[in-house]
Length: 348
Image 1 (tube, rainbow, N blue to C red):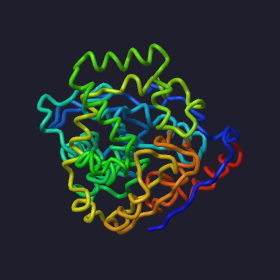
Image 2 (image 1 turned 120 degrees about the vertical axis):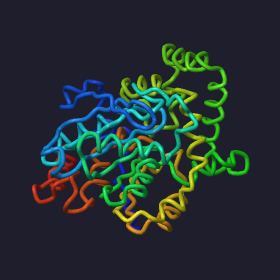
Image 3 (image 1 turned 60 degrees about the horizontal axis):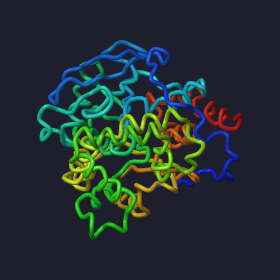
Image 4 (image 1 turned 135 degrees about the horizontal axis):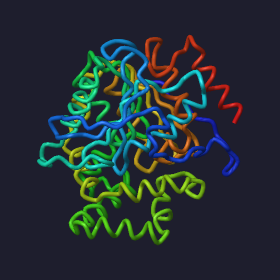
């Protein structure tokens, strides 16, 4: 494992911090919306920017959001790649995973596991005509991305992890009392979500009320390094996607997942980036990941919380895209992709 520190900056002095809002305008990004049938039910997917024939070309770029997120979580990263010019994200597939965004929970909630979520993502990519792909996952989406690499080793050519919730979160779900000191912020949040889940629609309504009262920004402070600089669209998205039932179910799925056993079989390159102030990632997670994943590279970004792709999208691109390999669809090194991103970083 190679660990690379991110660039430091004085608080409030870095114009690269959270430079883009979230958007839900898929047409402006060159995407369309489809409903694609999977074993878990119909999934709403944003996709587009195809560069070649459906059955050939460079493969898909799949972006998987985390819990309390949806496809729009990725729009700052897409904007950063577009701004860089020579390294746009193409052949995009961005699903709203079951229970989030425009996709409802599966009718049979017990059928939703990390494994079945990864299988559904593969179904979606194949239905859109892609035979291989690169996949980036944020938070819980990172766990699904790694499972996809396990279950579809010949089709998955690269995994990028953005603030992925791995061993520490899984063990905090399994042992909330004995492992409380590892990730106290996550464990307390999960407890709150489970209580709100038991309240049904009233629990969801309470979250919406907190947002309307302007209190949600203060409540999500631990998730960001500099919450006062986070665009209102990001806070609004968290308010809309803070679905207690879906969050509690997602955590339970992670708690039942055999991460070490599954990830030991990953053969493709894995590149990980997370913040030094990420309350959902412990200091031991990187070492434990390196113990089971052969080709792992980790970048830790200074002054960054749990949303690296929102807080520092340009740095996230540099961390997980340029070293993906010469045949990666994520960046064309020979077309100057890495240099263009680096130039954009210096220019900002």
